[in-house]
Image 1: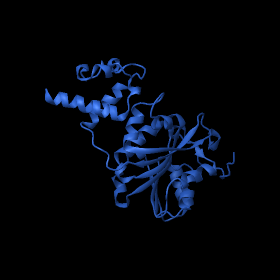
Image 2: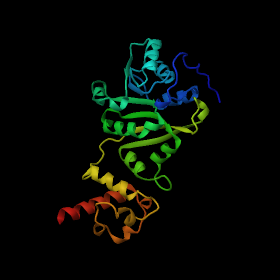
Image 3: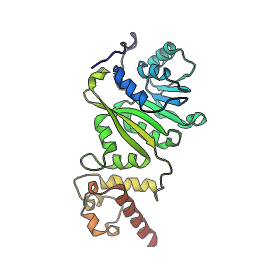
Image 4: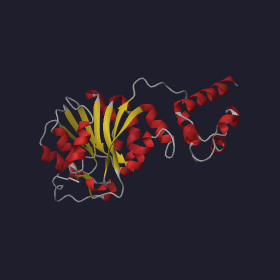
Length: 268
């Protein structure tokens, strides 16, 4: 495997609490850049680390690049070494940032190697501000990427339904642990996403997703067994559905069932 990116800068220690695994494989970097149109784009990156991806983005015809980096040492070093007026460094915890700051320069493209332990908190935040982010490419754990894109079978569940309802996903390059330093113990995956436009609203949306979560609480069990502990009355659900496992149903099935439940509750 060709890993021809220079070693990261000396003098800045790695910090395990930030999940720092720095990408060293230039081919994977190119796969990230080629997966979306960056011409005159507003781009933001979450976690620049030693700046390998940051530098490559700045070699592209982007309009601006905002970087969110929690480690002050790397934030300072990368900003000083890049010397590019298009780069704006935001030092701090991305999860604490009010992403309304993206509004003046929207739409944005996201390019990021996400820390594994923060993947879902970051994805939920991106979901909340998806109207500013029509497209992006992220690197995440292979197992998580498979769950997000599943449409049936093992691993298909709440995560699949939730993120597929609001985004279109495409599996890209599978990334070997040796592409990083230090090497993680698992494979990673590049994922391209596009935010869906004009998503149909769901009646009592927050409650619907709690309902979905309950349906998949133990995937091998039937809906009847999973919903016994929920606030949903089993009398509202047709008997033939109660005997199914949630993994046997798709999003259209769940939306139809939810609408029927809601209609019966309202009519009482």
